[in-house]
Structure formats: structure tokens, C-alpha cells
Figure 1: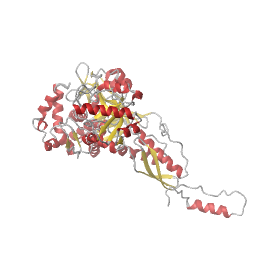
Figure 2: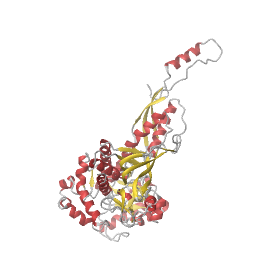
Figure 3: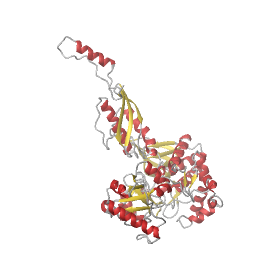
Figure 4: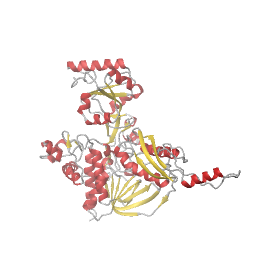
Length: 574
């Protein structure tokens, strides 16, 4: 049977048949209404392109939704689809709230379900990006008690909750996350860096970080900006982290130089780390409350007694706890805060996840907590425009504008690179690499194979697909190669390039921009992850970890100090 064929119910067919045979001229009013039933194929456009669904309808009721071929980011759609599916099935309608942190994917699923319902002859309102379920009345509900509450469900918050529960299995640990799915930006990361004493390093013979690893790490990071006490703890944590992750099934088996780690040569670290953390948290029966936003701290006589939250049902309540851990990330996604604390950087977009809105910055300030390095921002040189995926890394490439001209040294970075790109025609810049560049770095191969880049055998083919001047692009390419082959100083960098681009295609290209990747500053925490007042004294009952604090590193440091926060919070219960 054609999947798009709408089957009428047996009762409905009998009613229609009886009506046709009636000898009366009066209208037949004893027909039962026709019902929609069948299996329908539907599609819509999501974040990464076409998304396909199979929707089963029985007696006007949506009974199943199956996800088919799609191009959504796997670490998002794998978490978001079960949630949006359940919402639609419960409401028997796609007019439901989208999954926060997965807005485009939710829109695609809702649109495809609406299409299937129309195929079935059912009525459904038009779906837009703003389509949501009915508004919920604001309520205040009873307080909840916990031993430890963690605010933020990214890698640092999960590490904190897991470590606290491992240290004290009897502790009541609650973790709240404002989005409907767990994880911050870590789930997208290719590289889990700063890791030492790992099995992968041992297998690769990386002696510097497997023999006297802690001492060597401290030597490397002595000027990074951490206190001596925090640096010591950080180094010790990094030396234990691989074993801890492997204990929960997270195996980072590819060490590609120094402290850099991926899960495998062709698999990002972030998705594996995040999946392992979530699985472990669930196995420990940690009380995880997604769709629950921390609003404010509960402070009494200078001590933290918990956190005020509001959930997706618009219910506000207090979580009263002996220890509170804040792990809500930075503020890259809040342009007003960026403009206030790091003026000039607000002109750039961000590659960080959308939850980095600095929710507790003003809370920290009003309570007189110490803040540090709030003007420091890490700019990632190149991301794929629109998609926001980090890109680059090929051993050779050129950057050109719409006119086909190079305009800055490819080695440039920071805010200068970002604003120079914005100053080009239409703010457009294109990253072009060759087959050797494709072969040199997995990130390029992943993006090309996912269809994010255009491919051409010649510069003319690349120019046509990008809509830029082909003659000038060829001239730029030839000039670059001639200088590189001759070992001449490059006109922009002032030094020789490491090699010319391949003389023969294929070539690969994508539109790029620079982005604020993370804000480095935040609340000050000591080596025990305890938050400090401006006078240097400890805020009793309050801990912080990850990008919400000032930290010199990133991903693995967030996990490391999440563990420190969890361990010390658990110890404080004794």
C-alpha cells in the first residue's frame, strides 16, 4: 500500500456505502466521521539540511514518530529527538515547545509531523520557529532539600555531581540544567587537551607527559595565570583524569601530539566524553532536572544555603542544600555582558553553545564575590559561517574575499582577524585548502564529507560555487604558489610559507568568520573550588567550576575542577 494513502475506518466506509444506497432524498446524517490512519513519510529542513520522519497515525492519533535520514549534529539530535517526540505524542500535535538548545532540529521535526498530519487529512496549524505549546501559569511550589545541588549540566557540572556521588554514595545530589538536554560546548569538541599520564600517551611514547608528568605540566603552565596552589591541584587532576574516564568507559585512544586527545583518529573526543558522563550520572541515580534554570543564590549571613530555580512548567522553588556548585559556563552568548566587560569583542558571533549567557555574573557581583579577568576572551580563528562549527587546521590554506584576493596573513588570529574579515565586502571570507590539506587534519575531512565544504578540481570551479571572481582567484592562487615555491617572504606574514598549494585539484572551500569561543574571566575560586569574597575569604557552602570561573585552560580543566568541587562539597558534609 502507498504510505501516503489515507485509509478510512471500516465504520466510516460502511456509513458512506449506506448513504449511497439510501432511497431518501434527505441528507444522510448518520455517518461516522472519517478517521485518519496510516504510515506517512515526511520531511522538513533542519539545522543541517533535510530531515526525514516516518509518522504513524491511527484513528486520528499520532502513535509513533521514527527519525530517518538527516544531517543534524548527532550530539544534539540524539538527545533532542526523544524529547520532542514524547512531547508531540503526548499532545497529539506538533504545537509543542521546542527542545531548548535544539531549536532548529525541533522545528524540523514539528514541521515534518505537521506535513504527515496534512497528508492524513488532519487539521494542523502552520508551524513556525516560534510555535510553542500553551503558556504555563507561573507558580511557586514547595522547597526541595538536597545535600549538594549542582547548577549546570555541562562537562564540569556533570563531573562535579558524579564525583560528589562517588565520594559519598548516600548523599542526595541534585543537578539542574536550564536547557532540555545536558551538556555545554564540550560535546562538540574534537580535542580533549591538557590531559597527561594517559594510556594513549603511554602507547605513543610521549615521555614528557608520562614520566614526571605532573612536574612537567606545572613547568609548561607556570605562566598561564593560575595560583601555584590551583596549578598543583590542576596538574594532579589531569594526571588522574584518563583513568577516571576509562573507569566509566570513556576511552580517549588517540594522542596526536603533546597533550591533545581524540577518542579515535576519526572520532571527536567531546561526544564520547559527554556520553560517558551522562551514562555514569544516570547509573549513580543522580537527580537530574533538565529544563530547570538557576536564578539566584540563597544567602544567609554570608553563607550559601542553596539556589532558587524555575522549571519549564513555570514553577519556581528553592533547592536548599548544604553545598552548592555553580558550573553554568561563561558569557560568550550574551553580547550585552561581552560589551560591558570586554568591549570590542561583542562585534563577533560566538562558537560557544547558546547557554553561555552569564546567568550568575550579576549574582556574584551583588554578593561581593571576587571576579577576575572579565575582559579576557578567547577568539577562535575560523568557524564555518552560519553553522558555527570550528574549522581550519589544514597544513596549508589561503583566505580570500569575494573579489578573490587575500587580505591578511593566514596565521593571524584574535580580534584583528575577526574584524578584518568583517571589513571585507559583505563580511565574507573563504577558506580554501587542497588535497594535502584535506589529508593533514581530520576536522577538514569530517566537514568535507559532511557536505559543509564545496569541492572543485580547479580554482575556477571553486570560484563558481562560491560566487567570487574566478580570474582574480586564479591569479591569487598562482601568486601565492610562486612565492611559496621560491621560498620568498609572504606579502602578509612577512616570512616564507611552509609549502605551495597542490598544483592539481581537488580543492575544498567554505565561508568562514572568527568567533568568540570562550570568555576566560569569571568568579574567583581557590584550589578547593571554593568561591571567594573580594577580601579573599571563603564563601561557605559555595563552589564553582568550569568557565563560570577564571581559568587558564578549557575543556579538561573544567572537568578537573568539576571533580575538585564535587570532592570538596562531599567532604564538607561529614
